[in-house]
Length: 131
Image: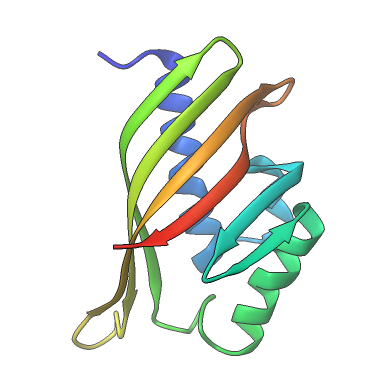
């Protein structure tokens, strides 16, 4: 049976996907630390504000967010906890056309580092690698 920490970490990873699709981006503080980094496709956002701005840009383009009919699907497969630090590996799919015939447009692996904060577990580093 997973520990409470394991369950909380998995919930944070899933919440990140939901917030990208439907939630308020200002709620990313429930997922990321203020100094977090998010890397994918050769770019890195540093800091919570930069992560929010990049997500807002994807929403503004119609790629993500309510009404886009696209979804982030995260499947945590491994969580390793060492006191107040943790690492997680998740499979990730970006699914488009969810209102018609869904298509997997991206399959990748998230490698996350997390830290226990006074408000619970938060991602300090997220790296998205294709494949």
